[in-house]
Length: 594
Image 1 (tube, rainbow, N blue to C red):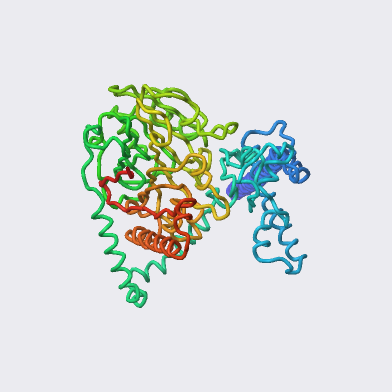
Image 2: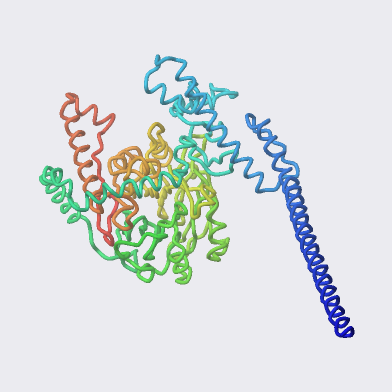
């Protein structure tokens, strides 16, 4: 009995010990888990502290940058030591924006202080200048001998900021860059026409205007349509007469046999693509676009001619700017593969794009800035032209056009002078290269061989490319004064609606007629419509409005002639020119006046 009791006690003792040991192990495990949790918490806190320290170290340069900007943004004198190129771009953009905001703020304060004593026009002109008048003459003549400078273009009021080196001694605009951003600008309208409409305005156009476009689609404005039926019939009849008068002969491979030697012949292929032949057996192609798309926009009608339909030799291709509806990558490749183009004439910046993207030889690309030109010569019977030299289109010392007046005697070779002229537009192919390349128009003067190089023997053509009409600057008057008059001009009339979004970049039919008159063009043809749906106006609206405007202007000219009693004297001094602005179908041909 005693042995059994002892054994039971031993068993109980052993069980108690085991429970005690188990509890000790559990407490050690809990302690170890608590230590692990504390160590993890401490490690996380240390990582957060180190990350915060690293972030502060990385932001030290930005703090210095912000400090320099806050101290020096008014004068643009920034410390750029040890700052990367990206931060330099940030500094330039910050300075440019800050100046714009400050000018606007000072202008608003100034207008409030004058208590409404100024007229609306004066307030509008002082919008960007804080109430100070900026005259082009003061920009140009200051610091120079004004007695030796005689130009009718002085005294022009500029409504936006300008720099002295943006204009030459005579007041003509030069290819100009913004000193802060390095981007090209329109010198006479440096801020509002730089293409920076922005995403907000674009969405306002596309989304905000969807309601009005839907109403027009379902015919909600039927009352207005009823009122316009009679006028539309008249315009349609006038348009039919214009189209009936235009020639519809197809282009020929051998141009010297089908085209009269004394006239310029233009075939409209579509949009801004034209094929032009000159006396002297010269051929040019403008803004070639033969693809089905211009960026995301689909072509409405196929091109009237293909690359294979063009002659075997194209002396030069003129490209006005880099927008997708004017500089088409696939069309360029197709022309290269056809081996038809001899030279490519482009404004500044597009040469590098052509070399990089398409692989054109640099020797075949002629890059020009505004008022620069190139002279091409071709011997009679020869197929390929040769580059004589680059020239200045206008001699500022003698006041004469270099292509006509600086040489004497007869020409032994056919001559073609291509001049890069200004235009009001902008450039961009991506959201990041806005205005990194120049835009332009072109003036072409062809003189046949064995003739005296005078204005009577020189045949002139003007290609406007894409342009708007400056509201307060005589841009096209200057082009006509320096390079005109022109025998034939190709002027855009489409992509103008909505006006608040398009007016700085494109011209409507009424403005196109004004450009025609300013250029002193004897005859013009409409381009840049009825090919791509780039704006809100209807496809048939631009030619209708153009014919209506031409009819109205010609009627006013006739009434002015009848009102003047001494008509013969007025005609002798200032002969009134009837507007000859034609509308032709794609694929049709038009010739200059003999």
